[in-house]
Amino acid sequence: WERPGPERLDFFDAKGAVETLLGDLGVEGAFTAEEHFAMLPGHSATVSVGDESVGVVAQVHPDVAAAFDIEEPVFLVELWFEPLTRAIPERPDYAPPSRYPEARRDLALLVPADTPASALLEVIRTHRARGVRISADVFDEYRGEGVPAGQKSLALAVRFRAADRTLGEKDVVRIEQGLLRRLEQDLGATLRA
Image 1 (cartoon, rainbow, N blue to C red):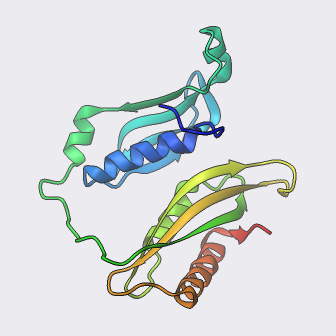
Image 2: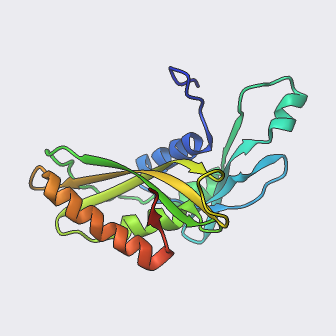
């Protein structure tokens, strides 16, 4: 599939598609960075539900794609039917959608280079803010100029939504600051300047 405009799809788009599918099935997946043959290092992960692997999401190594005269990035999503269907709950949890709009913040965080993005997402998912649901997606990873050695920058779209009210700017700032403190305590993550 193609995205309108000059922006190319990347690994996080493919991962996001898998997360959406799993969410629609009522399943919470975890992504563990692992190297897979013919895939681009640092851009491949095993998909698990609980303790069971249910698939792989990865970017095909550009050299492999070039061998087939493909210049665009190529992504692999492989989901294994049997373990995935075992993980689908018979009666999925249901929570009615909030009538109130979400607030979104894009955050660029510096973390140790060996910290998987899934660790940040787990801290965010489990962070408690009274009456506010917090969710996030990773949309970019950067290593290079401007990022200290031994670290990487992860860009996240963080969403805040209250079930009973529209969140004001002060509410969002307060919750965001608490979340950033927790990310720093748990993972050594700091806001990138």
